[in-house]
Image (cartoon, rainbow over all chains, first blue to last red; front, side, top):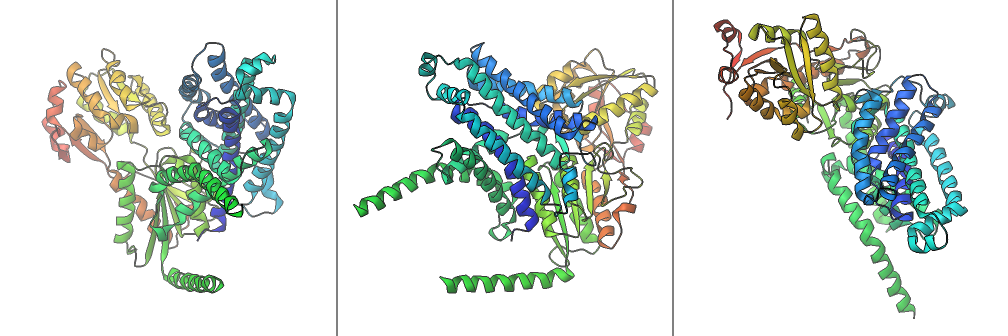
Amino acid sequence: MLSEIALYGAIETGLIYGLVAFGIYISFRVLDFPDLTVDGSFPLGAAVAAMLIVAGWNPWVATGAAVLAGMAAGAVTAILNVKLNILNLLASILTMIALYSVNLRIMGRPNVALLSEETVLTPWYDLGLAYHQVPVLLFVIVAVVSLILLWRFMKSETGLAMRATGANARMARAQGIATGGMIILGVALSNGLVGLAGALFAQSQGAADVTMGVGVIVIGLASLIGGEAVITPNTVIKALIACVVGAIIYRLAIAFALNADFLGLKSQDLNLITAVLVTLAIVLPGVRTKIITRFTRNKA
Amino acid sequence: MAKRTLRTLIGATLLAAASLAQADEQKVVAITQIVEHPALDAVYQGVKDELAEEGFKEGDNLRIMHESAQGNSAIASQIARKFVGEGPDVIVAIATPSAQTMAAAARNIPVIFSAVTDPVGAKLVKSLDKPGANISGVTDMLPIERHMDLLERLVPDAKTIGTVYNPGEANAVALVELLEKSLEARGMSLAKAAATKTSEVLGAARSLVGKADAIYLTTDNTVVSAAEAVVSVGERAKIPVFAADTATVSRGAVAALGFDYYDHGRQTGSMVARVLNGADTADMAVESVDTLNLFVNPEAAERMGITLSADVLEDAQEIVKSDR
């Protein structure tokens, strides 16, 4: 029903969107900052990486530059909010639409092809793995490394200060935390991760395109919420694992929907399926709690 | 419970065996397009019709898989993996982003692209004459030179040509660059106005008033969607508006020497049929649009202050009226 290649493809895309979900976890969950910049910082990362790779840079350096570009975009959103007192949602929308023009300027044209260019994936193809397994291997490594770094960061003093800022800004300020700086750092970090995802996606896709960012926020949120439904995010490490798991589940669901010819489903039904999945993900944890309480009551 | 699992397993095996037996005589063509859009849908229809005409009947000796990526690149990527995983005989990728995604995913399966303006720039093929790998197809690059010939014939004293385009559309940008070169060689100049959304087309067209002697619209999706806005400006300011696609002529443009995306699909279908019959994509040159039809709209010409001469009307394949 689901071919091996389609399965690996879903996991590969899921791992990349897991990075997006990390970013959205930091902004929406840790900082309580609804940030839509990601729809712009995803193609920004792709654009920066693609242009540098085409110019002959080392693909890892290019990917690093994409992370920095994403962080800069996030910092702009946060500064608009913190320093200029623009509502956080609006600030992120402003940055997002501005990035459309910026991305076009960076690439000079709407689409930069990376087919036949040397990417971060190129050396891995010589390892002797099947063609469709290579990106999964590399992206698992990237996702795990990012996860560990993020986890350690969240447990550090700065990370704790950031979490305090999101949980109770007034209290955090009273404890001497510069909450404005924490918001800027957090949103920058969040968009840096999204920029990384964009850069990797462009390299596995063979092109960077300005339209790539459409709906990234929705997919990221769906992944985050879906993951939280499966894994209760009561600790940071569990929340981070939930991000990746949710993103992979989301992509697997789409792969199944694409392959569900027997159900009569087609790709045009995907938006509906997404909506149903997200609704289920939101509703199911409540149902689970109900079931658990019923069982415990029975025991008692 | 175990019994039911066993039964399901046996059923599935039988089904798989049956579909395998069928696959022996059936060719499989997988078609993907980046988004649903009248022109791209017409290409899809054209491919299907041409295949049927060449003896590949859907449901009979041909199975067609068709998926649209809904304009979403992550879904395009997953569609590509799905197709590659099922190993069809030929994959048809409609429009540049779909073609690039397929090119990145398909290693040994022949891919025929369609409605791609600049296959070399998109790195799909090394050269138009010799693609050299598993990918070839049909480019919808406009015959800009012939369009400018027509424009000069109808508006001989035009010095500056205006165009409205979306700087975010890969195809449109490539065309505008070509247009600029063509006009330079003719001693004319180009006035560009950018519109990133359909709602910006009217304002962009207005900005051309006083600068342009004629307006030429490429096959830019954003602009074509809002062609009426450009036509209304042309009528009010007496600037003749020319189009690259024939459908826009009945929406009020003066003339177009265009092609039909349905014919484009037919041409793509014929390449697909050749691959199904054993041709190697590496040796198949990228084809360009072969049939061009002149559509004119005398009523629109009058409103924009020019008259179409009798010989132009004679040359026209079709004389159309505005729909309004």
